[in-house]
Length: 395
Image (cartoon, rainbow, N blue to C red; front, side, top):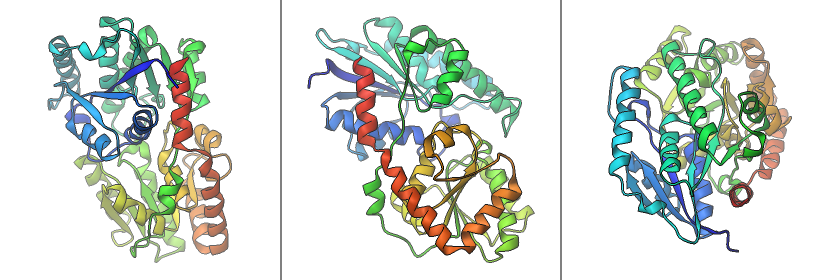
């Protein structure tokens, strides 16, 4: 079928000061969708990025991409300096960048911004101004909560909040279509003045077959966490929750998989030491898929006390591995995972611990919850997500 699309331009710009080791859910999503756009639909993929690592990651995942390098990454101690100077470098780079790849006589060219990060929206905005005929497709994962209430450093939350608002201004002005991952975000965007006819609800997916064929490891943990080490992911709650678990199940061990800043790692170690959990909590660091998933599959319970998510790919991966999941009751989780995860009223540490203990102590209950979730999560396939996204783009 001819969709009238010749190539898809993907923007993925990240300042070094804001990038930590390891892929994000957004990058995983991008790879899965582009893999299908390229292999199943024959689109040419052009990656405009400041980091070769993204092109390499996509190539490793079966996506053949043309790479356009844009210099945008410098290290600055000041967040304000980072914002101002990186933006100036971006603008300068775009003026010397050959934009021939945006030209096409007979077929439309898509610019696909895979997240609403300021650094990824800027090039899409610039391309749209320079070439009005291109179609800008913007993906928004979630909306930052009020910076004054967000866990972690207030200065980082402040800049994160207002940079997203600046991104939203550019998206509202120039984007042709906006893809979101849940209806909660749609309501919030409409309140912020986004036109409803530009917003389309899609989803994330899971490759259930991949996890079915993944083996287990001998290193079995009672509890597993997989995610970026940051305050918004609930790493403070995680240690307090596990302390409560160990009071009931003294021999229980928690494995934490994920990368983060040196500051986040140091904070987490101090938190573990303050509860005397050095022998009960193991920091495994960032692990590639081939190492991380066998550990995940060998665990008993998946703990995910994140305070803000656009969908929850880590939860879906845990479910595909057959683990029961305990998380906070974020509205998006009820929409996506229905009643197939245990969702605790946010910030109720004691109840979270109690539910984990209950699953650890009752094998039949734990195994049934894991198997039910494993069957349920199969409804979200990357093939269907990519097909739906193509349908949106082709409208």
